[in-house]
Length: 365
Image (cartoon, rainbow, N blue to C red):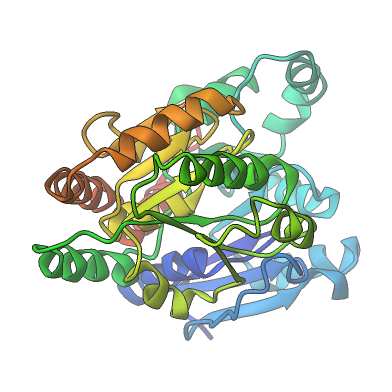
C-alpha cells in the first residue's frame, strides 16, 4: 500500500511547463500525482513526458461516474481542477470537498469587470464555494476575480503557472555570457496563429518599418501553428524577406531558436497570462508586450527590460518596435540581464511549495 501523499489534478490542456512543476513536486516532496487530462490540442501538439509516480488518465475515457470512482479509488489528499469548465471535474471536487479535503480551483482568467463576468459571479458564487476551498491563480487580476467569486484572501494563492526554469535559466546565463561583442538583432514571437495573438498586425507593422528603412538589420521570427497560419504566411507582410515562419517548435528544440534571437514580442489583444513571457525572460531576452499580456505584471519592468504597448494599437506597437530598434547592443544586454533576474524569481520549486502549503492548509470558512 502506497505511503506517498497524493495529489489529484483534473486538467484541461497539458504543456511541458506544467509537467516540469509536477516533476518538481514528486521529486522533492515525495508526492504521488494522479493526472486526468483532456486530449492534446492540435494547435499545441506538445511532446509530453511524464515523471515517475505520475499516473495519467484520459478524460475522454471516463464519464462522470467513472471519474467519481477514480477519485474514490485514488484517495487523494488534495484535488486541483482547471476552472469550472468541466462539469464532471466539479462533481469530483464537490464530493471531495464534502469529505473535508482541500479542493483548489485553478485559473488564469483575469478580472475585467464586464457584464459577462458580473453574471458569472452572480451565477457561480454560492455553488462554487461548496465545490472549492481555495483558488490558485496566476496573478493579481486573477486574484481580484477570485475575491469577487467569494474566496477569502487567505484562501487565494498566486503563481499557478511557472516556466520550466531548469531549461531556460541556464540558457539565459549562457547567452548573456556569449553576447558581449554583439547582441542578435532578431525579434522572436512564440504564439498560436489565432485572432487574439496579433500576428497580422505584428507582421504588417514590422514589414512597414523595414520598407521605410527604420528597422535597421532586425528580422522577425515567428514560432507556432494555428488556424490563421496560412493566411498570415500568405499575406504581403507575412511573405516579407525579413519575416520567417518557423512552424510549431517542441519545447526541447526551443533553445536552438532562442540562441539566434535577441528580443521577444507578444502583441496579443487577449492574453490572461502567457508562460512564454516567463520562458523568454529566463532566457535573457528583452520583452515587448502588449497591455493585454498578464505575465507582464511579474516579468516586465518598462524601461528596465523592455516596452509595454497598448493592445491592438498599431501606432503604439510601431513606437515600441522603433524603441527596440534604436537600442544599442549594450542597452539590449542590460535589458536581457534584468529579464533573466525577473524570470528567476519564480520557479517550479516555488510552485511545488504552494502545493504542499495547500495540502497542509486548514480550510477557512
